Image 1 (cartoon, one colour):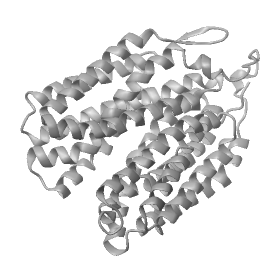
Image 2 (cartoon, rainbow, N blue to C red; image 1 turned 90 degrees about the vertical axis):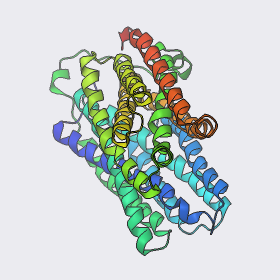
Image 3 (cartoon, rainbow, N blue to C red; image 1 turned 135 degrees about the horizontal axis):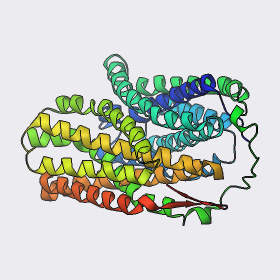
Image 4 (tube, rainbow, N blue to C red; image 1 turned 45 degrees about the vertical axis):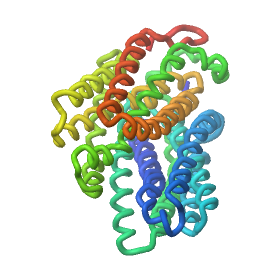
Length: 414
């Protein structure tokens, strides 16, 4: 029987998780905000792109590595190291003045930040009761939206009055403070965990060691989730990065206007997270059935964009909002909720880390391919390629709705 937090303890744990993850977005997105300031005085345009790529690669690889490590260590120290390490590297980046130093520091930033989500997920899985785990993994997506908006706003204010390094010093300091908060508060919250009353008379069950990785890799539920994770990452992050350019080129709007309009997408994406929770329950906690529905919605909206939605900026932005919100819902279902079902076997962080890394791989690949496709064939052909991805995702998730999580002592339908 595992000790769990009561509602009050679960709320306290959630909010320190929220604070740490919110601060991580401040130190993650600040480079994008100041990149234009660095191009010319410090970096060439190509070098600036490679520095950003370094972060994405380190974050993806780190998700794979740290997802496994997080299962074996205490979230107390692992999250503290991730937050403080990210903060320190951000502060050092403010002093960097060469391509190679910036490349190395962004590599380190990506790796340290990849320690945070596995730690947070492990803390929730180990200490929260089932309902609180579901609510926690859904609600924490609000930290992503808030962090995105505050990061761009904070960088804009700092760049108006101070040198570009300030956009790394302030988030770096806040990340270190969030690490101190976690270091101090987490042990006290964990100590309040008790065995739920309903478990006092339950028959104890020995869970045994964590499921071997070789066994995990061939489990139908995990294996089938790999391609949809890639596809949703391509749209959720890859497409989002190109929305300002799309608006500029298709509708002839200014860069500042396009960036302002695109910055509102994270607010709409929050609805996708909460719709995912609703769909999860309505589908009998079947993550694939819910994901198929959201892939289908995105596909229908893309058909509308290619036909009736052409030439209307308001309708186009509404379409983008629905599409990215649908992919946020898939993200919650596959990256947040599906791994919870592996928690009993000590592999929730591993599964989440693997799928998250795969999704970021899809984002990185799509970001480059969208540039190639739009340049060579135009935006209509590019949007049509997104439609193909969404239809494929819908088909795969619909086919995988009966995928099982095979257990040592039983089989559980997802």
